[in-house]
Length: 154
Image (tube, rainbow, N blue to C red; front, side, top):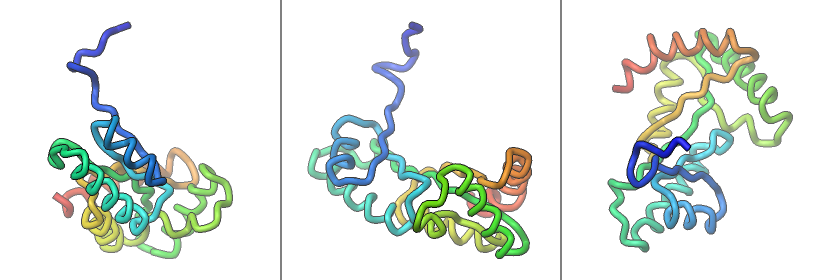
């Protein structure tokens, strides 16, 4: 309780990396979301596998949306943006090899370009996740995303 308003149920989105997980996402889910901790290149590979599984199951590709979580940081100094987003990712994941390849960071132009690459890799929806050193910084990033990035992506 309470029973869902949507019939038959709210959309169920799956994530995953392994081929069996991706096939399961298509078989059981209503959409796929790529992990924030995966690179755009890895996500592009996952999208190809998802689309092949959608085709094999005879599903309508338009009825199976694909999304990606993207850790993001904007700063007029690209080095500082990178430093800050990596500090945020370390706060979330600890020190994980390869995590430095994951975020989209830099100047507004660089962030727009990085997000366009995610869309070109197959993301129909992008979940923007500002990831700084603390919550106050993340809130400031939301303001910059709304003012400087989103209008350029519409």
